[in-house]
Length: 538
Image (cartoon, rainbow, N blue to C red; front, side):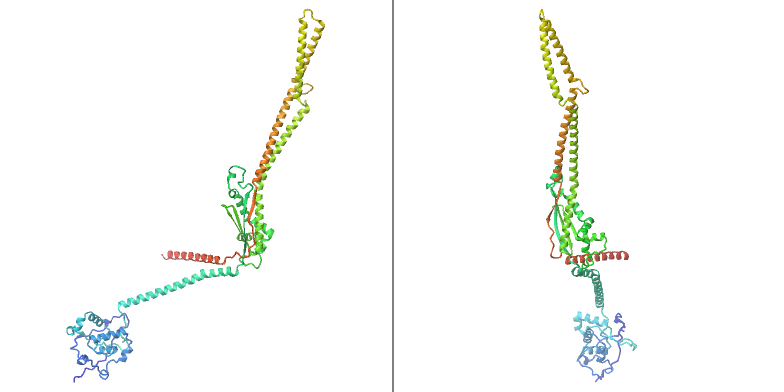
């Protein structure tokens, strides 16, 4: 019976770091299985040495304490089977290989095992297999690391590094996401919650009263009596008056007038109104005017010519009272806007009429003066004189014919001739006298012809004055008609009625609006900061 060689106790040097290659192990001499004295017939027959025979070798318990992985143990079994060993377990395979001086975890042995798996024909013909390498143990210091290396191959190391990078990227993304969420909470959600709390809990409800009114002209048309103004629709003709009325109702003058009549400032200074909407009792007119513009809204629709007004207060009855007062102010303003124009037009017509009356009165007085200073009726007097002259001329002609007849006798009657001659002379004298009355001034008065001409001129002036007076009267009447057409009337189409439910604040809409505003501000600031950071870093 042959004795087995005594097993030698050895230690395998393990690389101190995972990056140290396994090629640091010393390469043993290459021998075949036939030259190995430890591989005899018993190894091929599956004989297992007893613990007494390998008392100097490494025990399985020590191998278990090395912490080998399942992959390493399976690899050791395959290497042991490649070298013709018959291990009873994976740990026993490690023990048998180390007893033969073979490191099962060396890279060269693993590569040879992979090549052998890829070429099964070479593993079947063991007679032509290349000689196996004899792994001799290496003496190492006792205090160094003696555990087998757990270094991974490059592919696994790369996968591990990729996983580590991905975990780092995921961690940074989660950290940035948490920072983003915290910023959104601080700058967007928290202010939105504060605004929503105010609108839902703190804000004082305001009751609005809506009303509508429009301005119409007297004839339903334009402001003028004719021309293009009569062709314009009412909403365009009264557009300027509506705009002026709207401006007045939204002015500080209307606010002061409303405060003097119904105490606008006192209502919004009440202590039960929330601090944001409340007006301090000693506030200036400018602050009160801001509150007035906030709660009094007036809009003008040019297509329909309608003025829409909405007044909001903390009391619905007070809101309706404010609306009624503002409508009354608007009506007074409309009357004042057209009153001056109407007064100017009528005043001009009245002045023209007064002047025409004065001129006619002067013409009448001049005519009366002329009549008083001369013959009352010069034309009648002239007619009488002319009639008298005609009679005298007729008598003179008769006497002249009688005289000529007497003179034509051979023995005229001297007495008749003298009588006819005297009568002819008297008639001629009377004829000249009457003619002189027509053309010559007598007794310090002008002639009848001159007096007649003056009276006729006075009568013409009087007739002209009558025409002017009649025209002035007609102009005055037309002016009054046009003035009446230019009158503006404020018609209330929707009367103000006190509301039962509060119209403001609109909590949901205002909260959404606040969220959008804060989000927009945050987005603008974030984009600005990112752009500035990029510019600085570049």
